[in-house]
Amino acid sequence: MAPPLSPSSIQALSRLRAYASPGSIALYSSLPVSRRAAVLILLFADQAGDLRVVLTLRADTLRQVALPGGKPTSAAESASTTALREAHEEIGLPLSPSPPEPLCHFPGHLSRSYLCVLPCLAFLPSPPAAYTPNPQEVSSIFSWPLRAFLSKSPLPDTPDTPPWKWYEGSWIQWYGEEWRMHHFYVPAAGNGDGVDGKGGGGYYKVWGMTARILVDAARVAYAREPEFEHSQKFGDETLMEKLVREGKMGEMVRSSLGGDAEVKEGEDEEEHRSSAGAKI
Image (cartoon, rainbow, N blue to C red; front, side):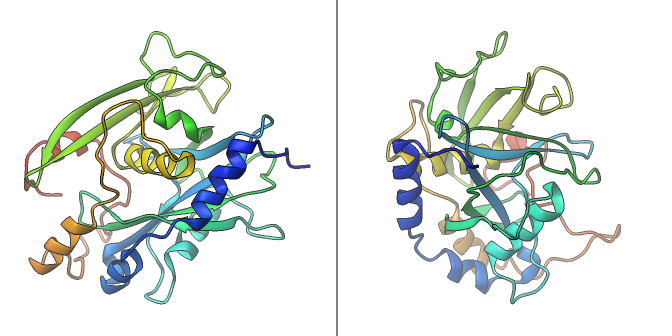
């Protein structure tokens, strides 16, 4: 039986259900299918009734932490359907008989390969006892309290993270704008397979686009701002509209290797975003 939700989790889900993202679907739908992607912020309640978010460690050489997600199979496939389908393929998310409840979507984020990545939120009332990672895509599955992504210190009721800090952040320049780069260090002990976001040991490094999306999700869910400095705006849609006008988000040309660019941010994201106008 699913654990009862805490009062704060009930309020958080209500806020997410009521959230309306202006313009996101219109921009997303106007782009070629090759420029669209969706990720799933999958929430569930732990034994204390706290909301936790499901995260993955990619199986490729980058060994990056990411949200489940990918590209649509057709122009008719909605972002929510894409995110749920990809989560089913990557982590074995059950879609029946008790599918996740769609909550809302957030403004799109721009990936380094000029993809519009739309975050879709869903709540799973009855999570499975264990997920089944697709070994070709995912090496580990773990979770962490969503509210932790508003805190600059470890939550008092979660394990500490010595010898690493829980949070580090810095301001960078990208396309002439200031952006906040977040780094969170989630303890791996008892929370997955004991590797970090770069394939070492002890913690998972949550950063880049994934971290920015989680900070925004927690801001909406808990109706408060983070304890650390952050970018006020949600997503990158104003920038993407500019890139569309400049002709930089047309049909994606497949590489000579036969594949399109990845949805998840790569290891060079910080370097890439440190130079305004750098290639994505």
